Image (cartoon, rainbow, N blue to C red):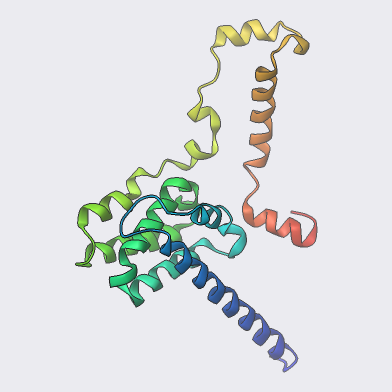
Length: 202
């Protein structure tokens, strides 16, 4: 490799290390808002943190690795807080934990659960409740609103098909448009959106 590339690679590594260091501080701060194994935080910070996490870090498995690292470094002070924070993450953002979408993240979650169950400082019942992987809905259920909200009956659709759109209610139009937009937008991943922001195309 040419020496010309060495400074570039070194700069990229430093930038990556700096990014992970900043994320580690945010992860620790997120954990601090959970008291022991309480399922809900004392601040809105974790909600913001997890909702923007895909934009803050390149891969969510790296975020889970940071939670594991904090658990390893100080299980007595942060073991229960880490479990509570990750449990909150699972319940409120289950789409992040789909095996097909990110198998590495899923495996790290399983590792955290095994580690927590082997730790004497955390009640096993709390671990089972907070890190309940089986409670994660299927990817199709999360991404497809028709799975959560069954479509209108065939009779209603037959009647509606004979009506002009101006006779539709605002709610009916909104549902129809939302379904169309969903089918298009649900195919776009966060990674593709990041790429679009950087280069202007997907």
